[in-house]
Amino acid sequence: MLHKVSRVTLKSCSFVNAAYNVRAGVNDIIKWNHNAIDYQATIQAGFYNTTVLRGVLKTEMDLAMAGAGVTVTITQNPITGKLEFAWSVAGGFIYDFAGGSTISPEIGFITLQVGSNPSVADKQPSLEGLTHAFLHSSVLAPANMVYSNQDLKSTVVDVPVTVPYGFTNHYEPYDSETASRNYDTPTDIRLITISFEGGDGSPLDINGFETELVFKVYFA
Image (cartoon, rainbow, N blue to C red; front, side):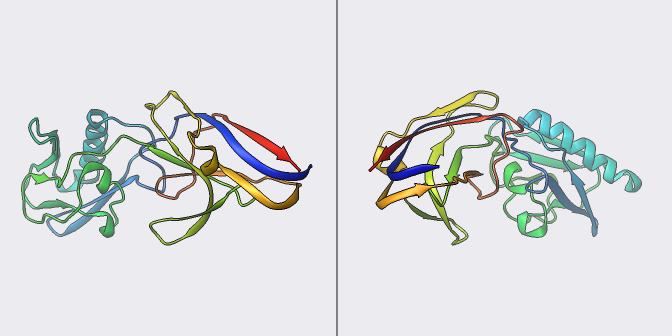
């Protein structure tokens, strides 16, 4: 137990950026329609670049449509950078996120494009992975942060992730006031619960790697 605490400041935060950009139950489903038949496939969780993901998507989509004798060729336009899904038999389109295709935002499909062959993504793939990590603690947080879904969460600090997948991300707050909590009266702290979330509000999974947090504690 910490007795008569007057202030707690986060000095640094370090962790390995081992967060996947395709996560089970979050953005691992591609759903599409071909000639009025709905199909879907689940992509194994992992960290993918565009080339590898194109190959996995093709394998899973071809397997799902094998009974119909349809295949898909997935290329990346060298000028626009957008993915293009060319169907061996015309009549296919990719569902958007609202239609249940949770990976669609990552591969660039924002709107439905029924009747086009190839089906061309609205924008380039977004596979950069983790860009922010939010450190939460009701005991240590100086205030709440409003998320896009209007939730209020006790947020100690927003940690920018500036290293690629597989490297250690080290962060030291440039302004100690934004990463501190001052207690109005001397406070005894018996238990500190800390959690991390990604930028989308889902729990941050760094696949078993450790996190190092350094705090400075002031006593009355």
